[in-house]
Amino acid sequence: MSSSDSSNLPMVFQRLPLIPEQACLLPEISNGFFESSFLRSGKTVTAECYTTHELGDTTSYLQCIDGELTGVMPVCVPVKDSSKMMLAIISICACVVVLAMLVVAVVVRVKKSAVSAGKGFHDEEDREQDYPPFPDRQPTGLSIMSTTHK
Image (cartoon, rainbow, N blue to C red; front, side, top):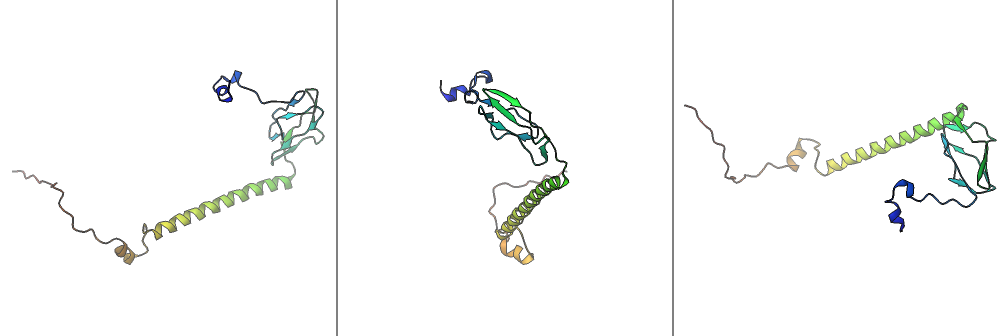
């Protein structure tokens, strides 16, 4: 069976990620992550927390011994240190400001392009110069008939 065939199988029959023998599968943690999805036997690991969170107990770690996960599960708790929280907020605000500046720059460039392409007018002289009156048109064969009531 090829790998493309396995994607058509129900979820129960699809392949799981390969984990080395005697390694431990790492669990998901709230507000953080592990750098890998598994841990080799004899190794230890601690979690990384997202910017707005920190490890509640810096001595908490997990160890894999012969396929068994032992140790204290790391927990990410909200940051209490106001300077670290302030840094996170400033980082997010800076990203929003940069994004807003980028949007404004794109809008200004699009408007300038529209004006230079003749889609906008600066004054009445430009209007007459860019768009001369329509030439006389040939009759189309259609006419509007008026009806008179007696």
